[in-house]
Length: 121
Figure 1: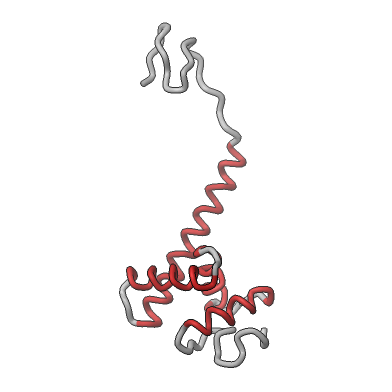
Figure 2: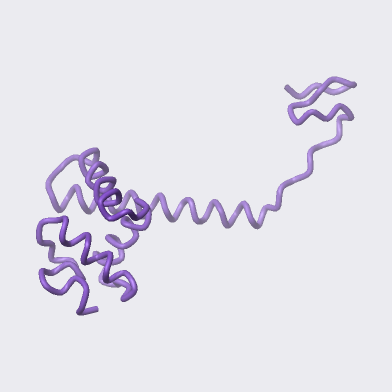
């Protein structure tokens, strides 16, 4: 709805001047974070689908259930799963890995072996 010559533009201005540009560095950082979260969500869904031999839709539902049962955001659960699979589990995530491991069949990912989920990182 961009109309010049005294008519309203989408942002309500009537003078025909361009709107101020938002801070692009903040936008760039937000975009980077969103893309990284999406990458990790996709990776976690793929890992779960492969590990449990299910569709990606069922893997997504599993990821959501793990999130709800642990009261942790889906993106955080995805991050912990991907980092564990990649062999770089963070020590501060050990309690969450233990909780997730208790809700999943045994997995041979670092930090998810039975009896080691919370202690051997």
